[in-house]
Image (cartoon, helix red, strand yellow):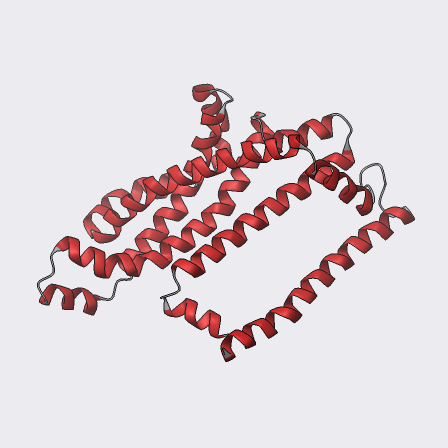
Amino acid sequence: MASLARVSAGRGPDLGLKVAGIAVALLLVELFTRSGLLPERWFPPAGEIYAEFFRLAGGRPLWVEIGRTLLGWATGLGLGAVLAVPVGMVLGSSRTAFRLARVVIEFCRPVPPVALIPLTVLVYGTGLTTKVFLVAFAVFWPMLFQTIYGVQDVDPVATDTARAYGLGTFARFRTVVLPSATPYIATGLRISSSIALILTITEELVVGTPGLGRAIIVAQSAGGTTRMYALIIATGLLGWVLNAAFGALERRVLSWHPAQRQEVAR
């Protein structure tokens, strides 16, 4: 109870500082625009932007675009994770397999996903498949390496102890390897979530696949600067909500882990 009270007491001032920071930033933008320091043609007053945002939030079209963006984000993220985690488990468990695959990994990993857009459009067209492929390619690498690091970080003493007690390969994997690798995989998933959203929006901006990215381009092309900024705010809020959701899920799933208990205690 005492620790919970300390956490609640600490969150109050922290939340107040965050709200104050946002308020100051909005006030400065409003003042700079109203005073003419920023051209109103390209930087509408913050009050007008947020009025447009709330107007859009009250209608169906914005949520349709958010749903389209989330569909590509979730499908690509899920596909990348499903492919990366098993491969990472194998490469992390076998030094020989890791050495064999290392050259291929080091060649493919530095390739920017946006550089694959022309090829992907040529092969898959401008539909959802292109978005999913690019997102899956982008999130595959952080998920892969986090899984490899998690498997390689298993305490050798714990592995030897399990082997000494006669546990088979699958039992050692379930009781020793998987618990050690899970925090790494969870961190990789949270990082990959942000990367996936960035790639999703980028693909919509460049290729024109339906979603928030295309809505931003359409607003900009039509001269709707206020609407464009409102959609950008929606994109930022979506990223914040997804990151917060993954952080909360990570804390809940890994509540047994010492690092999470220390975080709660602080």
